[in-house]
Length: 218
Image 1 (tube, rainbow, N blue to C red):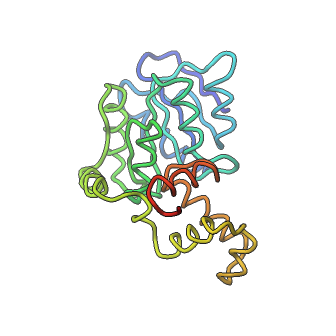
Image 2: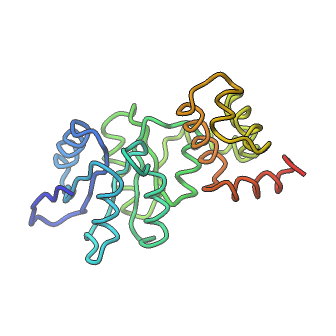
């Protein structure tokens, strides 16, 4: 953790993003806004969890969280925070803004989601919104999420993800799937992670439960 000293009052914001240049940009942007102060920065999910869920948790109003970080990803951290500190407002700011991923974040406890491609002011406005107890979500994403509600998650997978899912449900391991599809084991492992995230499952057991519940296997 990189604590940033400040005695000024206002909303206490922390940044969790593995790119230092992004954190610098966010800090400068937010500290131009009266009533906002950045109190800590984290370069990975583990250091953020240690500070936010440790013996003496960091006092915080809003966490700005990226999804792709070294080690544990932001979605895993989000679930841990929701379980232990549900009062903490988490705003996800990520380039991974597919509606299925946004829905995953909201189900995991995010108070809002802003794509990294958004206007910088959207991040400032979203911080104020989530701190006030409101959900922060761009109108286009909100509309896309409404359209997703009518579809089960497995029908929203890409063709390649659906193929990996079929192989997983057939009992094949990552190495066997890689050989079957002519791809590297790392690539298949990444697809497996994406499939689990999109289906909202965290383990092979939960994946089988989802499959049975939706009639994908007998």
